[in-house]
Image (cartoon, rainbow, N blue to C red; front, side, top):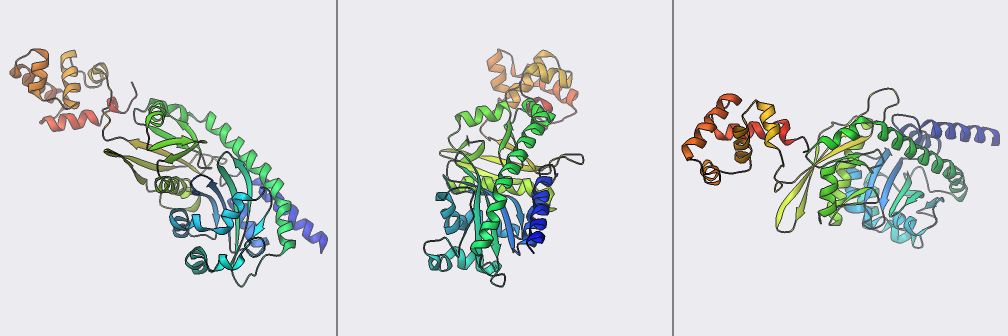
Length: 378
């Protein structure tokens, strides 16, 4: 029996290290864990010590709606997760063994409203890695029928931890190398709109110049330990949820709809964050990236008249007029600023209509705002 157990453990290690190069990361491995150790669910997550915000990375047996309720509501009431924050890393702890007041756990709102409806009665967890304020954790869940965890089982789980730590570090390095070689990261710097690229661990792999400038000055949105955080815990949770959903969209076969988050600002219009899933191409491509665009409704795009002139084959005067109209100036204001008659400015506007195929000033401005002139960074 001992030989059979060692053979099963070796197979499990093989699956773990195979995950390092797998396009789906640790997804197959956590499924094998669930089968071999009779687990209802397995979750590999990142948890923030500051806000107790959780980002789901690889999930088995946990439905998306339950992850959402955990991230948005119940995660900060999870007594086992709170215990893991204080416990030494690299060891598994079980809700039925290590919590100082086990009865308090089963009487908690988290247990009654989140665990019980999913038929979860017991949990075991371990901090695999710690990077600044961020903990990479693995959580095992069991139903009442599968029974509580034993000390012998926890010791068996602990045998996996050093291998899991190495595998996660190797995966991090692989993602970093691929992200560094990916031309997408370089192309983001050509965008005028603030844009961020996230890797499969929910970390910011690249930010363009506009995003860097925004995060350097914005109070409501910042970068901390390569993670994007809001000014409030609720904003950070919402951001993390949308990034998490985008990262897992292709792996879980979900509909890759853009995620929208409004980040409130005191006395100003909110920032709009739109996150879209990314899926690399090829046999070994990473299937877990996300791209985020940040729209500031109060930001006036900076463009050059020369670029507008070349895009639409305009004269210098016409291109300067087009930029002025897009910035909100009226024909009367343009005429006063340049010392021209209003009739002269209106004549130039009619010339702009003819060259751009538009008939109204609103259509002209809409065309120019939708052109590459307002998407390409100066």
